[in-house]
Image 1 (tube, helix red, strand yellow):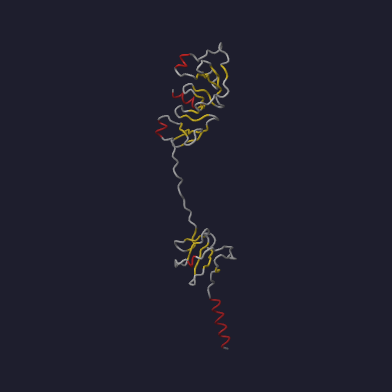
Image 2 (tube, rainbow, N blue to C red):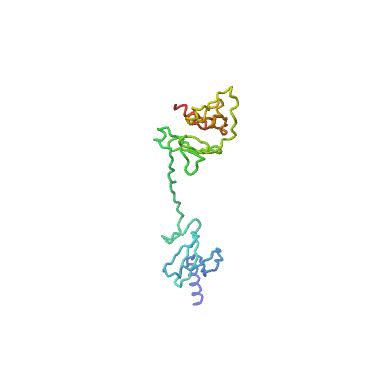
Length: 238
């Protein structure tokens, strides 16, 4: 009778005992068969005296130490990550950061002064065009040309040979503008009847017809091949 009573008591204790979280002791340098994780060093023997440690490189796990200095790898529940500050698994916090303010030259003051074109930092083959206050787009100069802020246009680099120059075709049809007074006054560039071309003089007074790069037209005011919108803008202002 006594044996039956003891058996009933033990059975009741077994049923009443709470279910404990499954953990597995991990020896340093060995794999955890349950999750394939390997602990390369035992933080429980570091002398810090703490019970919980973060797992390097895996925020979904943490290390729990026992009184004997043995390390256990504990897996956080799905969707949670370990927080060392609270030594608990918590929902991952999404940190929202504001994008850094983009500094553009297209200020209200610049637009009021009529300045809409600016050099592109570090690349003289590109330039900024303002489309509104603090609104800017990057434009590319045609091949072989560089942005010149003083002329507000893409120009040939000093010393660059003009592309496919041809001798002025018909001196009787077009008057040669390359006169001695013009050359002595450092005037070497003139408009051509074709807006996609211009006339270039040499020191001997010879005239050459040079074609502007594709998509550009001659701007006599700046003496450069420029985008059509630069020409239009200059006409409106002038």
